[in-house]
Image (cartoon, rainbow, N blue to C red):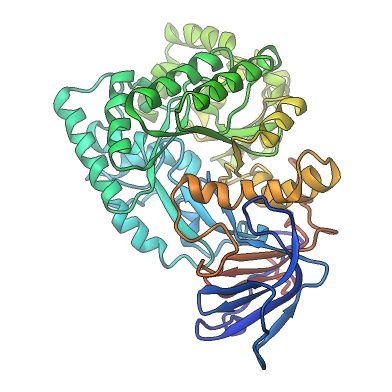
Length: 523
């Protein structure tokens, strides 16, 4: 990583027995209230006092004059399920102290007896080794307690749950299989998972009928947890996808979180207003629905998502066989072309597995097709065959006007949706939260700092029932991010996405200072 700053060395951390004062800053308590001058006293892992109080004598003090003191940021939608267990600095350098993983139907548990199917399914987003997996939420969360920088909360992924039950097979499940999935979901929620997620554009979860989703969402509702969904469509059938999820919430009573809401492709940009009106009406009718979004017009995921999902039935091997079949390939190509809303010039290759195709990283599929003298869809299919499906993409999806509308909407919280790749990641992995505070708030003025801070602190904490985090208040855990409003920003770009943010001055997690901008490091 370039121009990065280091987590504070263990020897420089404040021990849990110590007290420390953050003095003279502007306090953003996380609720959306106006900034207010004041001090903050940390004792052990908690906030003891905030505002104006009698300052204890002979206690270490950090001068925060000219700085904003906020709750530690909460990334309510992350795919760092494996990387949170490592000493990765990308999130803590942004001020993030809590991550909610297990999104879009992908969780690293429950692992089947042979974990190969789970690895095959999830490694495109997890960027893991060839061997990983935990038996349960309890086992995974126990491992995550040792995460050096962030608190970890996890959703049970529908795709992972389905693979535990039925492997990579698509289609409706038997009553016995569905009953077993309901029971297992209940157990995982009881063992500490904070909710359930679906990824209805990723096989095998994409093949689940509504009856299956309804049965599982009813389990979520009974346990008073959150249901987060990557819907079936964000382009031509965006409105129908929103309708399906709202109806699930209405029938089951579950708390619904629509993931990364957007309208993909210029022909669909007007649909976003219709979708938002549907959500607002549902909310007015008493349905507990909100959504999240990230502050970029581009998205990123696996290239296989563009294929008709039946092509992925059974996993990578059968997929490659279908793409190579001279009778099936033209049908697959025609359907893929017809469904693509962005255009191939707006699909860029972010990562590939093999050394021979590394030269294609950063190029659009349209460029690759021109170089090879092929149609774009044929070039994309050939690349998936050569890489055995292991291709990540960057997609230019939405308009700036639509982005402003979702970021500033009162029902949205802001997320990174970041994930690691062996190539060129989306800059949201390194820059989401400083970009929101600097570029979006202070430069463009799309929303105020108190509003933005609420969308990345108190709002996600309440949404996922994360106790005693997300606010600056006595008795809350001392998760605190101090930043310089005159400097906070992210220089990370799509071409150079690993540049570290600037302006994040201090980060405390559970009362321990785990990051300081003055500590410079290299990688």
